[in-house]
Length: 160
Image 1 (cartoon, helix red, strand yellow):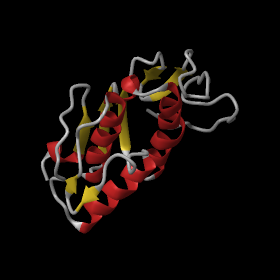
Image 2 (cartoon, one colour):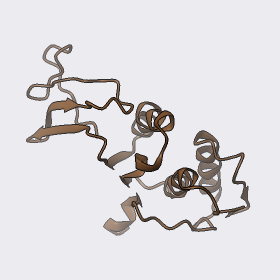
Image 3 (cartoon, helix red, strand yellow):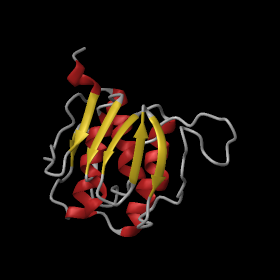
């Protein structure tokens, strides 16, 4: 497997495909799960390996692009400004539910955002994690040398 095959991406200028690229049973199950999880089932149906429509609003196109990326079941997911076109409620769900669910499932996440969430790393350790705009991240923690203040002596893995 080439290095490129490890990454699924959704860039700010994504293109929506009508068909899933490799419509095996796992891909179809993932697409169906994430379509429902992201609230698209009232607008888009998955008919065999084809989406019933890609003619959606900007706020609905982003979740469909995410469904397509997640259905590829690649270990690294990179999202570039994905939440920018989402309403505040869905953005909060994205940050507080979707990303933690993906992380818990073992995905490596690279999430590029201009939501003023600033993470300072020093030699791979988080030393400061802040989200001053409150766009969904409930935690406003300062971490010193990889330790969360509430976890005495416990290493905190980088969370992005």
